[in-house]
Length: 572
Image: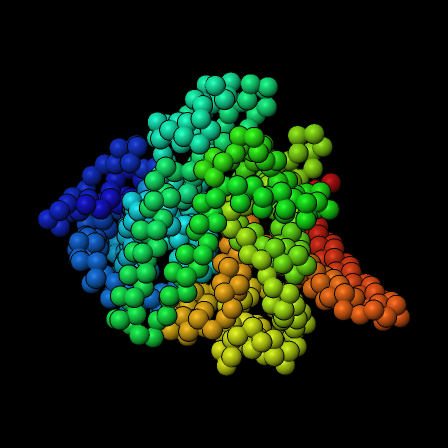
């Protein structure tokens, strides 16, 4: 049955299971979803009756098999304009009536249903819910895949990302008894012997573990990360199942090559399941980026840490994509985006030691209680990629070429990184920009809604080529792609994607990395001095360019303010 709003929001056209229409009065609690989520009409009572045939058609469409709706949706996808507005908080996402009625000027009593849009969104939502249920039922590796998909706001339909975002911090939990058992087995003591207090309700649950807040007997507040008890044994089965599925897909569709996915899981999952390795990574990155005063990496307490239990300093904050939290705490989203760009540019281009799981549940923001300064809290250090020097330098050259629109060098370094003749597709995947934007200069042309739509609509058409390309590039590039995807998802959520400042920060890091490499390979004092002067000059050019951009921004703001004052003069 389908509910619909009447003229004053109190009456509704009701379609029962037999397709019969009646006029009903909506109870107050049934109206909370609002007009954007319910069938709307703008005529009187008669218009509800006149449009019953359209509601019946929508109901019959909902009752069709999923495969039929999929065929219908696929056939109309290219011709339907999409709305990217986020769902209202608390709205029941399974409501299928996102379509609206438009009043016909020739006949105010008739309303037109956008059946095409409804069909497409219905298929997306149903598929997303089933995918989320699949991930939660199988846990472990499947939840990690779901977390990655849930962060691709700029690429996937909203129905997928909004449904799968729950996996970032609210994945299925282990019971209190299971948590106590893991702690008892690994630390040899009961919880009450180790902690003065221990919250049974986890702060968050993810694919491999969940985190509880506790207080030690000496008064220190800590976060206790406890691995799900069955994940060690289940992980090998998950990888085997993935391998079988990939081989089955290859038999059905020979052009799709996804065996690299299984190879990466085999290599990375054992590292993520070793919490002692995670603790070492946390200390290494904290030391490596200690010059960033905005970065906070929780301290590890080694005396109470094992392969399945990790004890660390408790640090509170909001998720990096939570704009409401930032507004409440007066945190500037642009500042957060700049800090995030600096941090990851330093990791990728300068250090070659990259945190590869920056989904929103692993990156928190807060104001430091002592100083009031904004901090980024980096969590979950289980998965890092160590870049070889050759790869890192080629990657630096490639990004320099992309930022300064040197297309000859873009081709050269893309091919050095294994892209071959697919280098245009490679650069589009790397930047999440269209080939036209890459040719015009990604630092010069902002991302538009049209370009975003073009990328989303065309991604499925190039799946065979993307699959082939992922088999060509070095294995290091796969985790870099994942990291770029997650970071762009955060920028899309904050509304700061592809800003000029982020590209300038990347360019600074590239210049520093390339200059350091040249100095390392020369023994001539004169040559080292020459490299240092060249580095300083290039950095000065970037600072000057950034200053000009800021002046232009201030000038534009002053012009807009002057125009508003002229259009709306203050009353005397």
